[in-house]
Amino acid sequence: MIRRRVDKRQNCRWELATLALFVSFLMFAPMSLAIAASAQQEFRWAADPEGGAPFVEADPARPDRVVGFDVEIAEIIAQGLNRSATFLNVAFTSIDQSIERDDAEIGLGGIEDTPARRATMAPTVPYYRFREVLSVRDTDASRFRTLADLRGRRIGTLGGTIAYEILLRAERDFGIKVVSYDDDVHPYTDLIIGRVDAVLLDNVLAERRRRTTSGFTIQPESVATGHYVGVLAARNAALRESVNEILRNAMRDGTLERIFRKWRVWNEDQPALFADVLAGNPLPPVLGFDLPGGEATVSKWRTVQAYLPALFRAAAITMVLSCLSMMLAIIIGVSIASGRVYGGKIARSLLTAYVEIIRGTPILLQLFILYYGIVELIRLPAFVAALLGLGLNYAAYESEIYRGALEAVPGGQLEAARILGFNELQVLTLVRGPQAFRLALAPMTNDFVALLKDSSLVSVLTVLELTKQTQIFATNIGSWVVPGALCAALYMAMSLPLAALARRLEQRWRRRTA
Image (cartoon, rainbow, N blue to C red; front, side, top):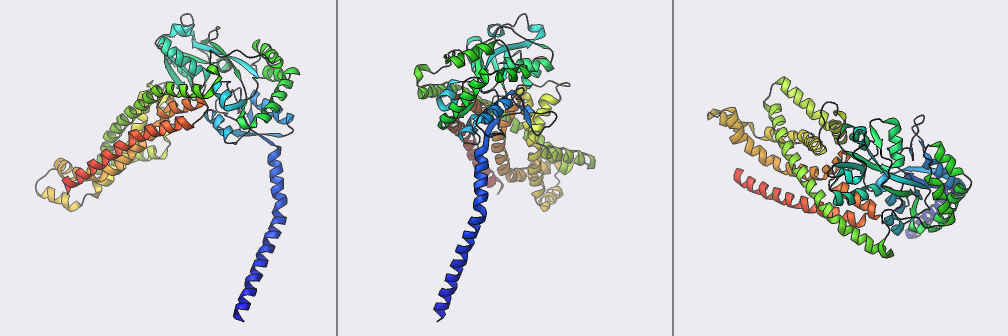
């Protein structure tokens, strides 16, 4: 009888649960269908509005929306597909990967037509022809007309672009120094103040910057010619064909011309491009950048081999920068900790304020201030600014480690040393310091490994360290798999020996102080 009652209760519970699931389905199924239908009506496109004018930029009147000629092109494509355009903010160097992940259906915003994109993605027909142009200071306009004139000079550009590849070739041919930037604003400001001797970028970017900044000249002779395209994932080839037809129609009816004239980028190159695209004519390669023999995998592995020396050089820069920065952080950190333990009230207050300010503000902000913010007072080289930025930042954290270690030494030992006649310097160097060092060694090692990885942040100051070089490498071959694996392997090869050495030192020091 009891078992029957239990079975009835269980059956009743199962019936109630089934009924609840059925009611939930009736309630939420229409909502789910509505969400799915809404998603199908969206046309998601990705671009980077940071420094992206006139392609994509924040509207000065309404910063929550974007404007630019690529914004209007995205809207034309969405209308042609009977969908609504939805913008996705993605860093420029990550657009290709974002498209592959299906975060968005197309990437726009000054995307260049390159062999890597043709081999791994589904680019649209070109819709704009640009020229790579050389910009120099007004005072150098007569002597720096070509790349050959800039032997041994520093030339700035955007990383992961055709211009960057051109400069890599010029580096081998003419011995120039390539300086890579993450945006198109700072190359021209650095050009004017003398940090670089020239800038090689698209004429669209150069002319846009020339309208707002004086002091540099755009040389009339172009270095190369390229094209802007939209990029889709290779699996979306059918959608790409629909987008191509929409772009061709916009060329025929004058829509693209009106957009380009509105944004002041229309020139005599565009009618010829439109004619070639509409006629189906093959477009000329950019300095022979087309795939040799039509074999994508061969080209990619050749590119990997070509980039290996650059990755090793970047790893060496990362290691040297990290070691020097850690040395600086230790020296300053010990001084701050000693001042906070032994100093007077005013000294302790000032040092505490320094530590809290450094720890309370982002390291990127500190790097920007050192490199760009104080340029009117002192013009620091990029490597020096990176060294000071990392060293001063980590000194604040190191000082807390050392202060805690100093204060962790038992007071009885210090009193005993003083009774024996030791002065304060002897107490510190013979009693307190060695024990504090043993306590601080493990967290110091952790900070060193963290600093090694945080050195990737100095790429914003044009220091071409390992992560930045890997990012450029991945952009140029259209994949993060091989570059990411190589970068991780190099970081592991640098950090693991350091950790092992620190453990040995800690064990040895523990035995000595035991």
